[in-house]
Length: 201
Image 1 (cartoon, one colour):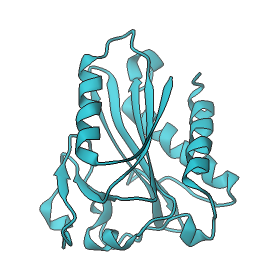
Image 2: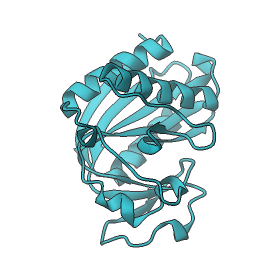
Image 3: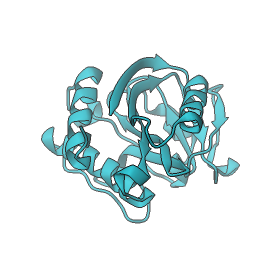
Image 4: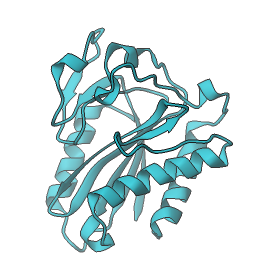
C-alpha cells in the first residue's frame, strides 16, 4: 500500500483524481491511502436530499458519487481516502466499512476515548455524538472515498445541515474531548491502526 499525505486540498480536484485513479487501475495496481484535509465544503452523497441542508453560509455544496447523505469537511478534520482493491483483499463493502470504523475506535481507545459504531448509521460515535463519518463507492471491485475524523475543527457548519441525514445529530471533535493531538500524529496513528486492522503491508 502506498500512503500519500496531500496536505490541505480542495475537494473537487481530489474527487476527480480519485475517480481517475480508480478508472485507470487494474488488478496489478498498488492500493493507495490518501491522507489530507479539505478546504470548507459540503459534500452530498448519491442519495442526498436537499432538505438536509438548511443554510450553506456561502460554503460550496458538491455532489459526489459516494453513498450517504450530506456532510461537512473543513480544516482540522482528518480525511482518509481508501483506494483499495476489495476483490484482492477478499472483502465486501460492509467489511470495508467495519474495518474503517474499527480503526477509528482503536485509535480513540489508544487516546483514552471510548467510542462505538452503530448498526443503523455508519460512522463512529462517542456518547451519542458523532466524531467520524464514512462514505464509500465501489466500481469493478475497486473502492474509493473513505472516512473523515474530526480532530480540531470549526464544528459550526455541521449545524447548517442534518449531518449524514441524522436529524439533531451533534458532532464533536477530539479537541472538544480535551484530547490534544496534532494532525500529523493523528495521520500516523491512523495508518498504524488501519494496517493492523486490515493486516496490510
